Amino acid sequence: MEHTLTIEHFSIHYDSHKTELCPIQLYPSLYVEDTTLPRYFIGTTTMSAALFYQADCPELTDEDYQLSEGFQQILHRFPHTNQEQLLFTLENGYQWKHVPIYIDAKDYLIGKLLPAKFNDLQQRLKDIQQLTPVFADGLPDLDSYKRKRLFISGRYGSRELLAPEHKKNVQAIQKKLHYINELYSFAHYSYAAMTEFLPEYEITTYDAFHETYGKHIYSFTITKNDQTIPLLWPDYLYHQPENHLEFGVLDFPSKRYTAFNDWQAGEEIMIEILAEGFEDVHFKTTLKKKLSKPPQLSQPSYQSEETLTLTVTEDILKELEKQEASLEILDPKKSIWNTELLDYQISEETLLIPCRQFEHIGRYQLKINSKDYGQLLLLFALMEENNK
Image (cartoon, rainbow, N blue to C red; front, side, top):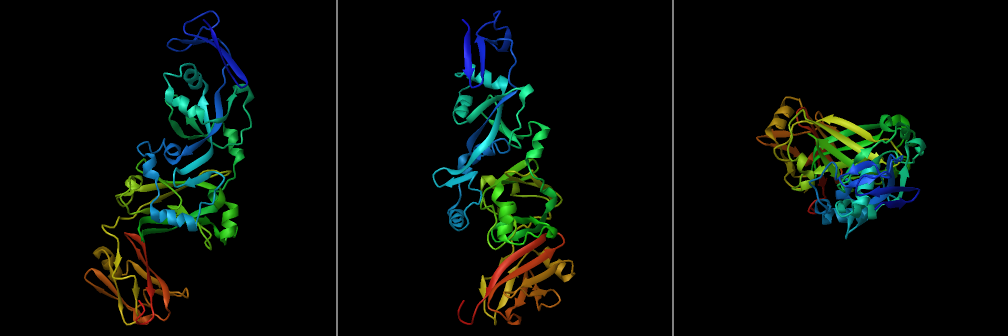
């Protein structure tokens, strides 16, 4: 007995066997009438982090995207700036709102007509808003740049450009940005870097960066050897008074960072930034050597009569001795002390810097630029006497 499936703007006859009215086989024991089918169905949905990155990181679950207590505290100080698309709660973690999706028409019809067989798809369909059929002869001027495909299995694929003309819906920005300040050791990060506008665009303040680009960003990933690391705010963030986007991969035993547990010099990584209304941004870089262990200061703060002691790999100390690496200290007044100005000694596995040469109380930055290991950044403070 023939039946009819009716959805908004579209209906189709179907049967369990071939009939004169339903001669087209979609699936075993599923036949439909010979009619013009939509190309696909489009809509929007809400996704968890695990669902949003499912295509690139199928091994990760919702638990892998839970934020540590430390990161949750950072969120109170620096909440995500894209409130239109990203929602964070302690109960549900990150939720991506209004994600554009599409379903191939054949997959959709099979799933709808055989719901018991494709239960996972049915569950996904319940969460989709404004599901609309799109026909080949009536391709709409969609407002979305790319859409994630929902497969009949109920899994989501990567974002796709459904039609070349959709590129006109986004602003070009790749050539306005540059990738800078790569760090191979900073605080708890094994790798970090920044993205900012080229100087000629005069984006010099937090507000300018926020309005021009920052508030539209909703995704940041790093890919190495075909393994993708999804970074969550605040793995990446920007904050006052800075005018750039910064990010880092924690040197931390998390399944989400597994791809960055180890690497070899010369390996390439790809950084991808997604922002609503803008083209996807990609930066490719080549990694330096990985440190066997991060550099370590003997203490976080010093007094002027004390000596700063830095333990670091012997290779870097040899580079300093041969002047193949440079040493730089930025003081609280933003004055720079470079290798030529600094009084320092190298002893076995340590770098020794007497603090008596520094004039100002406050926070200091110590940078080492190594030929083989890249840039290392450490922070320390110079304190008043007897007030460490």
